[in-house]
Amino acid sequence: MKPTLLILAAGMASRYGSMKQIDGFGPNGETIIDYSIYDAIKAGFGKVVFIIKEEFVDNFKSIFEPKLNGRIETDYVFQNFDLKQFGIEEEIYREKPWGTAHAILSARKVVKEPFCVINADDYYGYDAFKKMVDFLSDEASDSNFSIIGYEVGKTLSEFGAVSRGVCKVDASGNLEEIIERTKVYPKDDKIFYEEDGEEFPLSFDTPVSMNFWGFTPAVFNITEKLFVEFALANKEKPKAEFFIPLIGENLVKTGEATFKVVPTSNKWFGVTYKEDKPYVQDSINQLVKNGTYPEKLWS
Image (cartoon, rainbow, N blue to C red; front, side):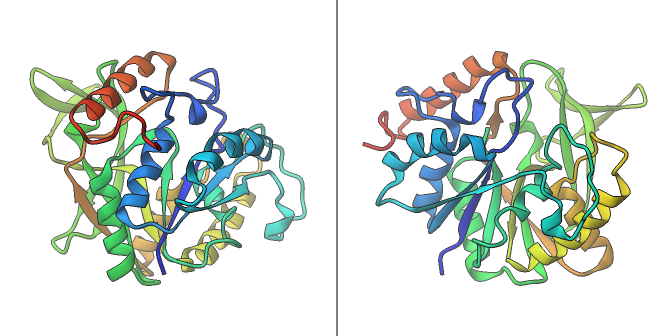
């Protein structure tokens, strides 16, 4: 059974100003998602599931169905505010969805095989998808999950400091914890993070999480239980978000599961602000010029 690719695409993109999930970045208007799916098909994934807001569905289908028909199975699930599906009867006010870990619960009824989760607006590269397919096919179990570890030096921005989840890895290559560093930046050919006004160095190849996780369907029941606890504990905090690293942190601390940190040397890039768009376009154009991708991706 081939693994499935889940794409987190329900975000509001408030800082970007429009739906960056379907914005064009390639030479023929290709989205970043197009390149992820292209690499996923090449690597051996059998299905792609888009996690979106229900009002996006017609846009997504009109953009992706003509390209993907006959190439890979597709499905669409909706992240919404309905808490009754989780047994929560009381109303909890929210202006935005509950976060990435809540989002993957949207797919629990349609995903029955090992799967991975990625962001819609991040470029990950073929190597990461191939290594994830190999892990999900050969090593994954209900107590052994994975995360792709990117070298921090290949994830930085030219436009200022970034936040990165720095992975602490044990001697067996498994995740011990993810430490969120909110100000990571290059300086004088070195990399630093800032904490309490002090600078601390990071080696170029320090592994960081870029939200590329591998699971089996066993994670759905675990996540649902944790989400109910989180939602009830944060019902007075309308901006609190239930992120995937919280699942990893819980499972590692309780010993219920291990997370293999699978290293990749691929360069990552993504888009948060409108100012990022020219850089992402240039990066993709370079990949086309060097033969990584054809100029017309789906021709």
